[in-house]
Length: 277
Image 1 (cartoon, rainbow, N blue to C red):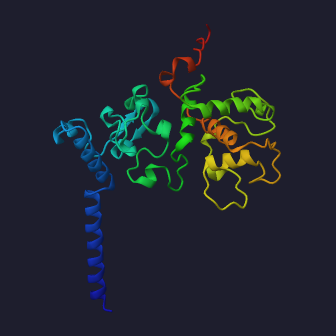
Image 2: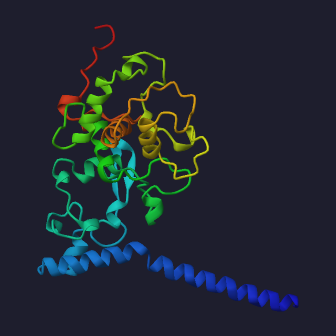
Image 3: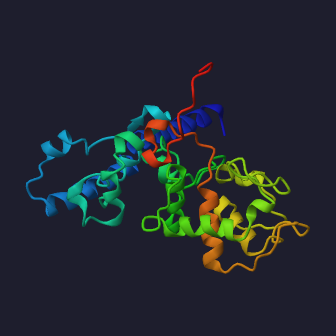
């Protein structure tokens, strides 16, 4: 094939790729989600008009900046109804979450509790299911772990499994081997920040299955020698519910330093005396 033909074919291929890229950028996947929400909202609330949707910022790329946490979340681009009281009966991905009444989006954002990659606008990346991203979404009952990042007081109604995990930690005497919050022995690893561990920093042995922190913790609690045959960890013969509760508690122990202003009053540390006072 002559150089001229190669050049022409290459140019055509480049043009086709460029056109496809432009078309995709003008019609991003998140736009379909917004259109679906708009269709539902118009049917559920007939007084809603395109102009009112635009005024309420339900169109276009959305983002919530939380300066106190140095976070920028674009989750509401695909989930525009989560803070909209009209969406109480909307499909699950758009449904209003009453928790936002006590945790306003502009103050806490989304990824503080749900994790994931807030700046992303593609589903796998936004859900944290991407290489080298260590904070995938907390799903199902594991979402209760997020409460423990701020709330040190008991939450038996809002996060029952988190509370059960906290209690099991004390009942089984985990501090006899592990240090946490400055208390306990250092026989095993210090558990401060264990909920922020990266999966690649854990021992997986010959396991070839999915590698996430919740999976490792759950299986480790069920059988401490699953990944490390010589592990000195005591096998407490936990059932699935107990192992899940302890996993949720461990996931709540992150390295995140919460600004004092965002902590509930009962969980705020006592003010330290000024130096020299």
